[in-house]
Length: 589
Image 1 (cartoon, one colour):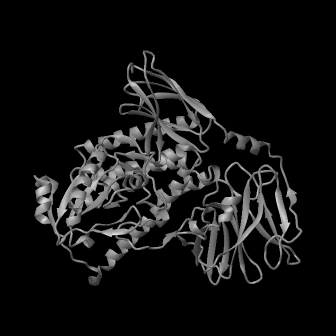
Image 2 (cartoon, rainbow, N blue to C red):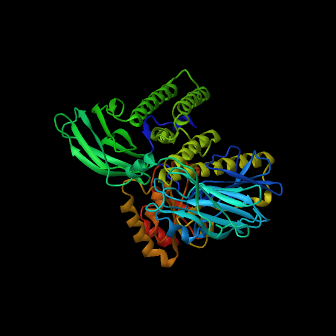
Image 3 (cartoon, rainbow, N blue to C red):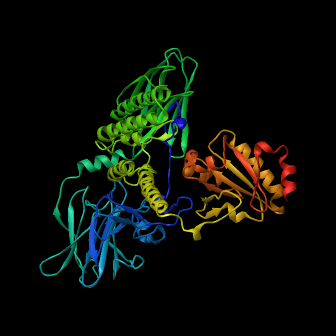
């Protein structure tokens, strides 16, 4: 990290980066390289061996699959066993609310054929189903055949839950299926030797049980119109507007606001969610971060304008931990600022000192927060702390940071299945694994030298990124058209008005040969996709956002910035050199 880019301010990034479908996404200019990890983070794993290769299956979207020849280096399948479109329709019919997150698979080789059982469910309910797949070889990733539903449970009928299947073969060679946990008993049923489906006339037998009082209470707590409450006093803020905002994955959303009186009292209520969710109290740029994981009442006391750094909280362990983390982060920022401003230290010495301070901070937070209680909202919060606009834990650059993200993601799978934030963490971790692998490959390639046959000459710095439909788009492919190359942030103030202006230009000149090639530097990819769904021109997204190398290569000093490229794919002028855009475009057309 260049010291000149360390911003002298502190911020939280609970809303970003949000990554959807990270295992299918690609970094710019990168081929679809396999994702290889040394330490796979899995939940409910099962492993099988065939022809010199190990196959690991575990809980995940479409049943996560990894392969290895040495059980040390694991290659992750990008789609898993079942891609979204291959998940059988009966699973959704049998289990209302089930999407793509499949639990606890089990695999067995029986009579020269492989069988894989898996469970479909939703958290806190026992309307579930166990499905069966068959295949002649584990190496045939497209060979899995849907064999239908083995057993299913219904909440208004059964006192057991059809999840966590396990195959058993007795001493006489008869196959059985056991299943069930997190409800009122473990069941077993006999299977047919020829089909591995439930044997005709067989009925479930209870082989272990417990009373499900705790589960029933949990199921009730996740239903209904339950509320949480955030109240307290912010002194010295009379007539100021206090906003209560949800920090959604798409950005802050105002839920409520109040104009504070003499005593600064406030009281906000909102619907509780099944998984922890993040909010904030805000007056202008002063923020108090809030985490809610139940129908709790949390009280805050503070004074304006120092509420971000100095406040008291009661009623929530998570909010207290977040307060500790916020104060630690502010102290880290002050330490870094002091190092940068120290005239006695040279640039190299400052970089070494800053790196050392950051490493110590990360180790402290990992040991005492993230790895200690990975299921807590405070651990999620810690992953997205920043210094300036850079994540302290950066899964795009560090294997160790990827492990921190994966640890929290795996824990959230257990405690909050199917939660959007848990899925987002998994996608970030997977994307990070891929990026780190690409970086390592590039370093190795640079040491070997460059193959001259791979060198491509052009009159412009290449931009190769994916558009909002996942297609790779290259600036050099636009040769023959006049191109308005635009660097833009859709989340910035004034974006909507500027897009309207670009639309007018596009409508006026597109039929004559003008194209717009727009590069989004938004940190939130999902937000970018929603904003660009209806745009008629090419819009690509740079995953590195404000850290993009393109900003340096094109000498972009402010955003938005645009350039004009002529029909020969030669950079013509930048916006600061253009007095009349219409006339300039017409001259190129």
